[in-house]
Length: 555
Image 1 (cartoon, rainbow, N blue to C red):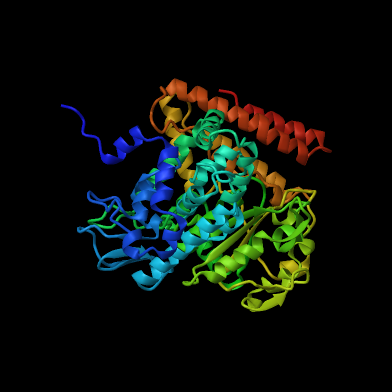
Image 2: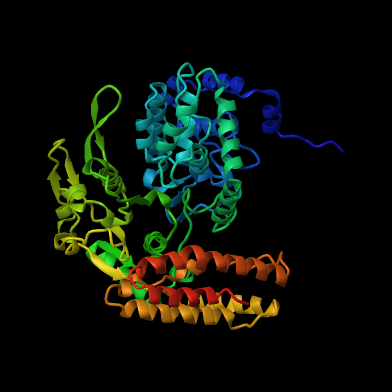
């Protein structure tokens, strides 16, 4: 029996991407986008009988070398789509199901409003793409990322290619080799610096993806794993689309407490502090999971993992007002007024029609010159001044920090090189101290797991308990040292990545060898250098704890 190939598979076999690109623009020129109707845009993509003449069908099933918009079955990535006959027609969270169409609620109150929002956004992106205007494409926030970047790729000037054939945020960040917190635009700008206009854009994009996989083979599997986890969270009965918004999934108190080792009472206290004050700093010694907890606190308060509503930055000594708020920056032809990350994020939160919470996470907040970076924001971030506007000196534009924007900072209390935060800023933040969690339930569960594996390997079951006990005594001595204190204690996160043989692929002896190697690395390259730094002027104490820590490695 021969396999029956779908029309989509046959098209992919018989047409090269440039031919498909020609056909796409012939069928859907920019002029047609401007006059497009809802019926022309939205079909039943993802069902057995989609309308192959709609724009959404062509976006999804043509030029798949660039990427698919509805990967994982999420048809809400198209903004609005036609419901299959078996779908439930109801209102569900941030999604609306009408009699014929379903759409994301923030696009409009009814299907006509939703479609007009989608159409206007697509036209704006296509027009900007033809001009090579990446910044305008990035600024469109009504469409999901993969949709807007695929539209930009398709409608760019083919004589002056400025958009690569990669539309996934994760993939382009990996291909460009930029920081994981970089925007899609920043990744595009960096990646296209390597593009030779004489090279085929499809071959270039594929080569960049293959290079990123070769340099980091775990990237692909990690992204696939995360995508699978997101797609399995929830679904609409009778439909094959997921209920969560693009890039989002439910996040509960139980999930938070399983990942962040604090008590339920402390979580409740943290949430109340942040809601009341609007600004909270998580402070503590290295290794207690401050940054890890900050992101998850935002997710918990949103009730979902929504990366579009969380912005993470890190302050440093060269970070300036121009980076954070607004200022003039060189563009190759002079200086242009450029909006900073905080200004843009405030505007994004203000435009949310549902006034959902947005979270700015400032890692290492005390590493920057705060008075210089914040400027007028020093007043506006205060809870009592939220919603007020202030004119910015350089631009004359008005800045408002909306009520639905929350700020979470992190601060390392063990870094001697960092200046103390001034009282004016302290008054505007609540400070929550995070401590080593060796006595929390999460770490106790880890100890039990390791104890069971040690027993299987024929080693003392309480060996890891003794290691933790030694660290507890070390922390007591650090806390009681007048030159150090509790802010310098050893955190639990040094031990959270212990090998646990989750898939039982190792024999007990093999696991113990891996475990012992991991523990040796923690002691030799993490703990000992820290102890030597703490007691650099007290050789006796330094050598005493060095001997004790090295003793942890003896069988």
